[in-house]
Image (cartoon, rainbow, N blue to C red; front, top):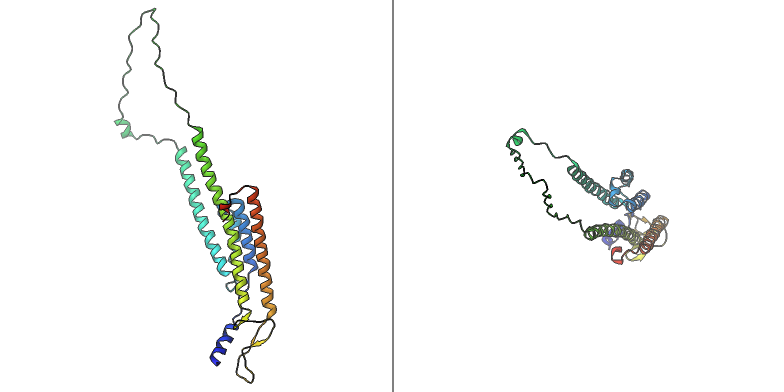
Length: 254
């Protein structure tokens, strides 16, 4: 019995971590910036400011792990976008670069131009021979080019909308998980604790360590998380309305 009480007191004395306002602000800025620019947001100067904010999230905060995950995502996104932009620049440079001049040895190996053949003189009244018909080159099929461009544009748009919905839904799931964690901290041995009180010490036990439960602190953290959840759900609802107004397919909103 004494061992069970000591284990119960030790578990109750662990104060639950609190959410971080710094992370909430930084995450909201990230969502808005990514919604405006897509993957190019990772190279935007504002993203550097968001990283600085995320590094200020306390290590004992409930959002510490989420802050590190977002920092890692920004780092990888910046590296991928930088490599993509470098590859595009190299491709453009190769396409616009003039052909290299031949070296002296290559010029020596080049064949001499063939001597022009002079046709025999025609009679004075002989009409010139008709030129052979030349087949005109066919222009590129505009339908094929249009189909390729439309398919690429559709792929990019699908990735854009899926990314926005995935980010909004992930935010809601994270906040709900934190609310569940705080609510579990308000129970001792399956029984709810509703006021500031001493728990775990039987009467007449002078050596027992008492645990003082602070309902005000718990309620403040839970109210803040509930407000954050409401804001996240409202942002998702706004995103749904925006997607509906632009006729975004339902399967892209998952």
